[in-house]
Image (cartoon, rainbow, N blue to C red; front, top):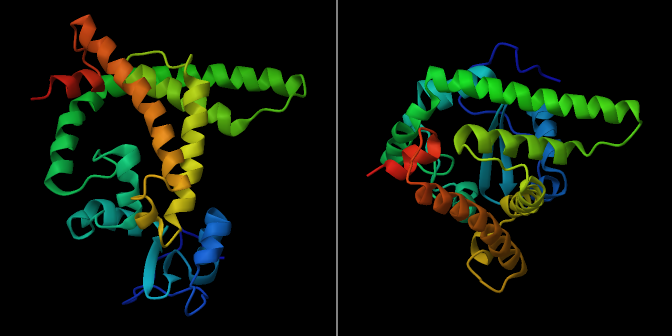
Length: 250
């Protein structure tokens, strides 16, 4: 296995792992996405060009130097759109910082940047540390009592607690289980759609089963988010967190 810390090799094109000439790695990715990506690294190294299906190709980069070059040093040459995965993200994340691109993304980044200045980050660190310590205490008690801990649910709840307090100044612990279940379903569904060659077409069909599930869960998240926005507007105080800055933007 190649270590991601090994010096990178200069090549005109990344090596490719084994794949069916017609069906590519589609079935492997659909069956076990993370395991398949690890196999790509094992077979081809920290940079791989893999056949998704037929003439459609994907690229995987895991070396820190590659990521720095793509995301920081030469980011203008690498765009998010029209990548199918980001097009699928639109119903879930909208045209936000995660899925947006170009000048619109740059405007959003500049708008949100003040929420992450040094003073704010120090305050966030304290909130994160406190939330983690509370979880560690719970896990320690569970371990001593020989109880099973649903680690994925615990991490989702802690993430929502931290995001709610640091970015929106609200306590989401009461909604954490409901939101966590919704996010879990959406994440599982998104992973399945991301490795489907027809998902961009089926998502346009309202009565398609996956589209109906997606729409239902997005509606649950919208209900929570718009409730938070309404409460903030009703308070008459925008606040100096991320939500306040976005609501005050022209």
